[in-house]
Picture 1 (cartoon, rainbow, N blue to C red):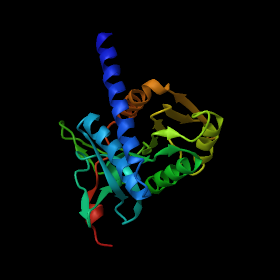
Picture 2: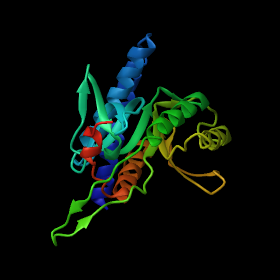
Picture 3: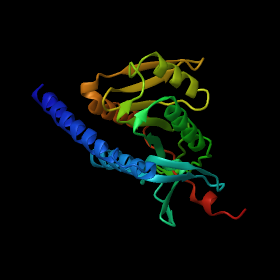
Length: 243
């Protein structure tokens, strides 16, 4: 029990530091500078605390047909089964096979930003993913089917709604799900949330209180990532084959 309390204390302190850092970024008048600082703060937090198998970066997701996603604030991806990424003109290109989750980082939570995150997620989920066979220790070959949808999230400092995570927030998620569903998120000042959807696209939302926003968000994200298991191994031949 003492360890749990200590962990909560550490995350509570880190939440305070993250809120402070994001507060400093909000003084930038230029929206690009403000956005860049917000993205950086969240990426650094995830990079420091996620298990090493998960890489965190900003960039563009691509598939073997040459299709590109929109520019993504935070990409959580694998470098073991899909070991190749591409750098060109200071932009990171991540193969779709290696992507676990995509996250948009904004200063505030509102309908416009929820819709924006949904559209960004759609641009990634529409990409085609290959799957190469992996040799097992017993010399058999196994191919992992691409059955898990890439996770999508949004992270902010605060909510523009009042109440912060009330009915307007619920309706915004339900509306965005018609484009591409949001699976999780965090408003540091208000709480974290994870979402599941029924067949009609109606969301069921589990929310934390504001005091445990960061730890609830982080623990929930790690649980979701673990449940996804390993990504499909990239079929490099399809990336290099001639058209």
